[in-house]
Length: 232
Ligand code: URA
Image (tube, rainbow, N blue to C red):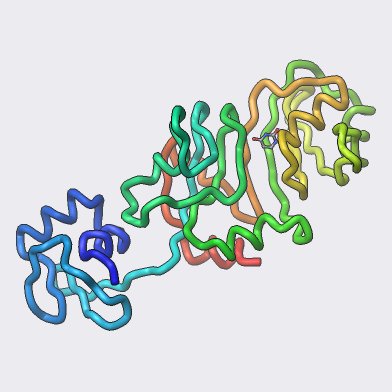
C-alpha cells in the first residue's frame, strides 16, 4: 500500500506539493471517484488511479540520469554534507541511491535508482562495465605514460589496474575508459604515471552516455532506449 500523493509524484506527475494541488482541484480519481486526500492508501496493481481521466501506471523501479555537480557526496544520507539523493528529493520515490560513487569533486553521469539488483549487476567487478571519464591533467601525458595506462599501472594495491583505453584530446586532456571502479581509480592511475587530475567528469557508463543538454545538478528519467542499452 502506498500514499496517493507518493503514487502520483512517483508517476512523474510533479512534486509532492504540486500533486497536492491537483488533488485539491479534484483532478484525481481512484476507482472512478474523485479523491482529494493525499494520504489515501493505494494498492498498486489493484486500485485504478486516473489524472484528468487518464489512467496512471505506477512504476516500482525508477532509473534516473543525474549530471552530478561538484561539492555533493555520492551517498544517500550524510549528517553534514549535501548528498546526491538530496538532489532527487522531488521524485516521490524516497531515497534513490547512486549506482556506484563519484568523488565529491567529480562531475558527470551518475545513475540513480531504487532497484538494488540492477545496481548490483552494473557494479559487479565480474561484469567489467565500461566507464568513460573526461580527464584534465596538470601536466602533459607522455607517450610512455599513455602506454602504461593502456597496459595497467601500479595503483598501490595487490593488482595493477586493468588495461584501459586512452583517447587523446590534447596533451593535457584525455578520455579514459576503464572497466573497474576502485576507490579514486582515475586519480590514482594518473598519479602512477607522474601526473595529476585537475578536473574529472564521467561521460558514459555501460553504453549509457551523459546527456550533455542536461544542466549540471539536473536529472531526468532514462528513456526506454537508454534502458535497453544499459541492461546487462
Ligand atoms: N576515479 C576517481 O578517481 N574519481 C572518481 O570520482 C571516479 C573515478
